[in-house]
Length: 495
Image (cartoon, rainbow, N blue to C red):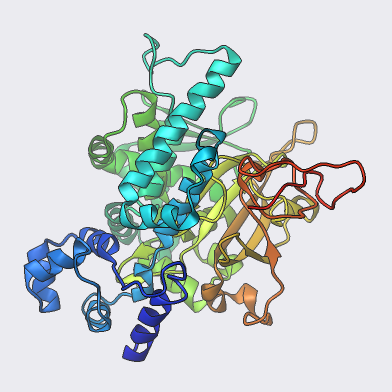
């Protein structure tokens, strides 16, 4: 970024971005500290790099001094970053979660204004996250109580944490912004040794499994693996794959097994450092990290990002280059957060035809509800009517942020005619300011686009006059009379 861009960024943050407090100076302490930790630097080393004293940097990180345009320019020059990455994307996501929590009837009498919520999320993100986690535990126990059920620990010997293993793992991955640099480096090193450009990734990986680990890969009929798509036989050293898996699925399964065999100790150490609860949570986290490493081997970071940039993120071309599926590429796109080589910061969702979310990842802000489903006005739900076709849409969330999104149906495995369809829909998106880098936005007037207003789950969404509303927001009073029928089936009073 040029110096003019830096100054514009500062002025924007001080006025538009800080509309609730126009005279507020630019304090980026939390994000500056996060950047330093991401780079693995001490305060002394970063201060030396930036040409300032350690005490001055300490004041910046503790928000005792505002960040100047000159300091932003120096950060951009020294660490080759886009200073806009220091904006409050993550804090905005935290404010969204906190707003949903505080919309509960339990807090309704407090009347906490939006600007206070935003300030807590920005200045004390750890506290905001703790409140959200506590609420999740409370809400889970409340639901269990309503059902007459009792929560059990992972060993089954009495009460345990209400947070499920999948919830814990999802929250942990998102706390890392779905970016694990150590795994990316391992994946790049493994890919360099495999040399997939010579004989293809699958052949190279199968040969390595056989030659280094004595593992043979077999594709078996569905009758042999009726309830599995992948199974590893430790005794026979055999990786068995279901015939229902397509080419990309088989490639990923092979990459996953190779990742486990080559880096089991590294993955176990990462799980230990995470502080994950014992039992299923740790096992699920290890599987998730192994999946990340498998993707990093199939689609090594630098090569993958360069291909995306050169093709303007044309997923069809990227798929062809790496032999990956649409969903695999979308998932990988959410991990491009290397400070020296960032990609477009995407978020991704996967839903079934009933709207249940089975996958949720984000490299930056995530605009959708954490405690409910997606907004029915988002076209990810329409994707089921046009299988295999990419649908684009520009949406706007209640805070005024606009996102460019695309949606398409996918299939995890082949579905026999007589069995239930396994069709799912994947939604991918980024803030509208990045849309110019995407081939899917060509021909659109991004300065004056057609926009669809969306919200979080209906219970916490305060958009009025929505014809697809399924419930009134808990923060508002339902208004019904005998003489008027409103557009929305659940009209409510204003603030």
